[in-house]
Image 1 (cartoon, rainbow, N blue to C red):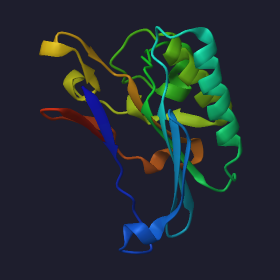
Image 2: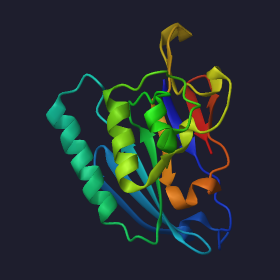
Image 3: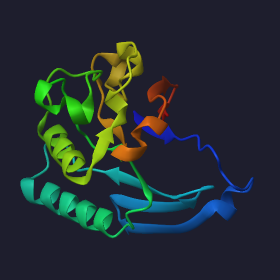
Image 4: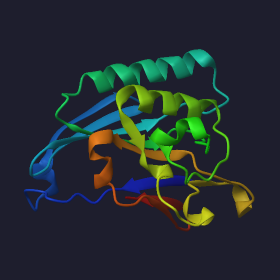
Amino acid sequence: MCSHMIFKLHNVSSSSPNHLTKDFKAVNSRLTILIVEAKFFKIAFFNAHEPSEEKNYEEKETFYSLLESTLEGIPRHYILILLGDFNAKIGKEECFKTTTESNSLHQISNNNGCRLIELATGKGLKIKSTSFPHKEIYKGTWRSPYGRYINQIDHVLVIARFSNSVLDVRTFHGQNVDLITS
């Protein structure tokens, strides 16, 4: 199953979505950036697809190096929102609660989860997909065939100073797609 993310923007200054798009850049096959003009700020949406947990160390290092350097290229006054398939299980470990809060589907973070938490901590981001209390079924973003296993591996991150602007993140299940909304 794949999942998609939908964002509702408030205080948008125009009724035409195309008019709001200021820039779009495909950095590579795993990372794209969409810059949107809102009423008071510009918002940089990063759509990322991290290599799976089984991929080699070098491939993951290349992904995170590129992601970090791309994040550094965005002006500080932009609102940063990262979303996508990070293949990251975020756990409920006490040491990560300031970044992740405690509403994750998983008890223990996997390697990709630890990398994502490290990125979030280093760049002043909050992982909002693990912030809201929902039933387990609404936390899962990937299901195995026949629904035997459910994982929360797609995430939404936002710059900490705007983290209170994200009011909810949850998954809506469909026949061929799981939607994550915030």
